[in-house]
Image (cartoon, rainbow, N blue to C red; front, side, top):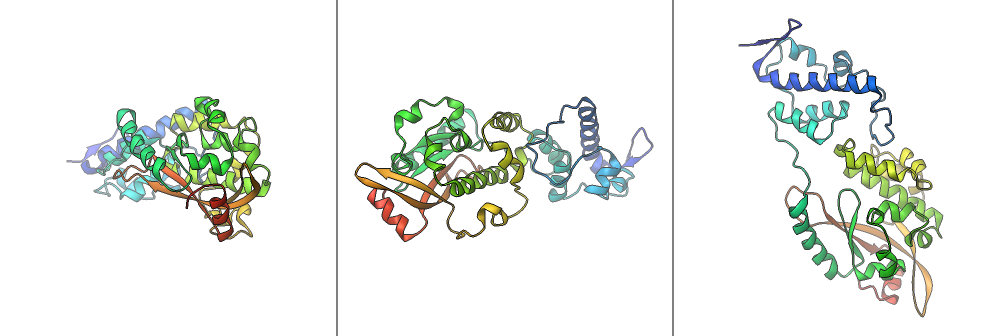
Length: 314
């Protein structure tokens, strides 16, 4: 038996829950727009532009069959890729996205590890990073750094004392890259072209990894805080995760295997410049993408020699 809505539309029972969730989210977004609660959108990575949050707009921009569904001509919810596109249009956070998926009788997205479960996996990742024969650190989805191995200190010329002096919120890749008060920044900014490329590629990697998390409170709070750092806002607003990074201006003229160059030094060894590239290593816990080990490889033979000179095994 089909269900009638108050506006006399008829919805097939298999689609009823999905339509109810969509209608609820559209109404919620209209209320938010009226209250200007989402007027600050500098963190959003999409090509939609301003929305009016109406059924007509949803049908035109994303799901042309929505009217037919509400009129009972569609007898099953849309496919997963269509549901995800609808969620993108609706600026859904993870909980809202999963409401749409479940209403469409699709598997929800597993939340990231947290609490004791995260701690257990972090211990595994840290153990691997401690014993890996390359500079490496352990990071989570929010780019928070949980561990540096000893080779990182040699590569970047910083000390454990310098890192120990940082506040917990500063143990983040973005803070280390953009904050002139922190010890890594002076090492990297000596080659501005290299720093620019590293900064923009880091933003690109973060946005790409967190497309589904743009409206989570931790994401918005972190980006808002980082906007006060020099040059962060300029690069954040001009790096798009919707295109390949090799189209980025900072990439032009560079060998595709080379990510950054950085200054490396050690007592008795002349300061030299090594070209490096990152390697992301999954801890291997099934569907969980994070935490990850971020390691650094020399990008050419000359850089391999520099690694050896400063005592970094490879």
